[in-house]
Length: 234
Image 1 (tube, rainbow, N blue to C red):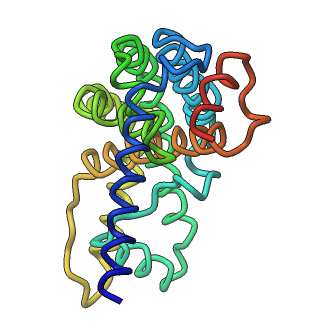
Image 2 (cartoon, rainbow, N blue to C red; image 1 turned 180 degrees about the vertical axis):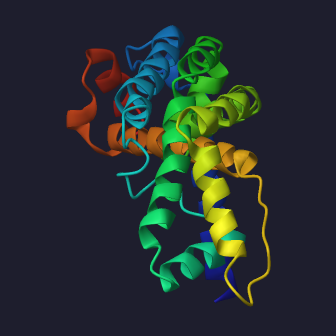
């Protein structure tokens, strides 16, 4: 039994070594595709995710009607929502949630230039690691490259959007009503940071959806380059 186990582990190590060698030399082993084409193919995939998924989030109800990314209240404010619904003010709670989502939809319009810069900066090494990685490796690359810049861009936009879509007034009304309910503890939350983080999560969630679709569904590879590049990871 010990001898069999040793042989099995030796075989596994050999297989892993062979796989790594193939991966490292992939563009030079007769696959008929260059390093530049691999990098450009990954850039195309990210551009497709941005064009087809992130743009949806900027439309009216892009967040609010999408259950994958809809922004609900943070845990500490769920008691506010329940308290309003308990006294027949469920419509007011719904209005407040919609206002948060409207602000996110407004902010995401600022994302595309930041994404474009990150995609343009992708190197071949980045592209090869993404291609051989998990179903969301391209999304993770984009998240690592852009999260800080996106937060700084989104946060003031969301703050301004709260005023533009009336969220400030709506939430002032909601909090005032809730704080007037007997036996409740007063709250006075600042929702700007929360909605900013939720908007970021929503953006990367939708890009990951498109990336997985391209990786797993051949019909989603809508250009010859996408078909050739992602055939390497099939």
